[in-house]
Image (tube, rainbow, N blue to C red; front, side, top):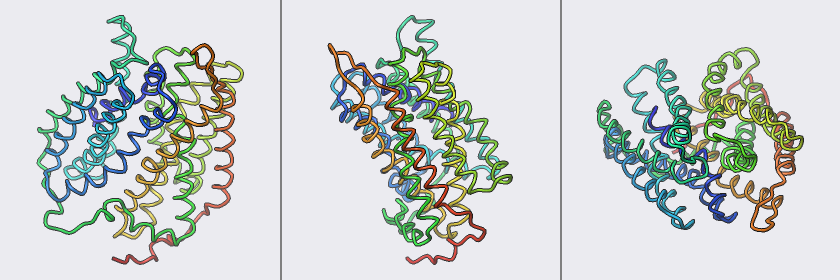
Length: 398
């Protein structure tokens, strides 16, 4: 878990800043930043292959090996088209590892132990900031906005690949059993859209990724323009806070209910962009920290809360597919669409004078804040507080 999330965070967090320094165009930048989203769409299919044909720990080692190879290729590439191709290939191999690491851990440990194992993924993400500190302060070499993060990510990938072979043997659990791509992508879960509340949740989870992508994919570009040092470390504060806020999710659900917990998560999405808006408009630096730190509340209360909502309400035979479906809808299709829309919003409020890009971040964050506010109000009105788990009355049809 530690290596798996470190190898991704070290290059993903400063990626937008690097693309800006490369003078990559808007469409190309959106495509490159969407490599993760496209990888998310493929990962359930890789998971299906693992379930049928390969021991999970061996497949994980192979995926990390190829991830490292393509990250090296990305690091030495100076052409945006080739960079996109290499990062897309890297994400095809990397994104399935998130579910594979979880499945291996849950196969060999009691359910109550899993959160303690998974937290090392967050620790790895936060610790990836050490590469920035070492590079800048010990080696006296620039880090953010350069190609160095790709090589660091590749190095961790190779280490992870070797370590994966020491994991417990996890043979394929569905060998000789039939399963289709439709099952892998959770498409059968669409029938649950007959339930109005579930449909509202899925639609707004998708729509929420449009403002979410502005932070997830483009925040390093914003911080680079604001001359913030140690972008990677600053943004990793969000993951550090996430480790603390995730612990509060069960208490929040018990105290205010699942529906209000999810709504609270979207409320903090609004707090993030309001902080960035006032910070950029009034040049108040400390407000940027608020926008970063609330990441844990947004992710934990809205997205993790949503996973809990699905688990509590979906029929037993559709639970796993429903979780795959929400991942496909949000970090797959939703993030892909969100990256292009957010990229266009940035482009509309950016001018180029003497080959220098001048951003109107106040307007960019204002538009994002207004969009989030509208989503929050509509979601709070339309997403009802259910006393009865109605989804379980919808029968599974093969």
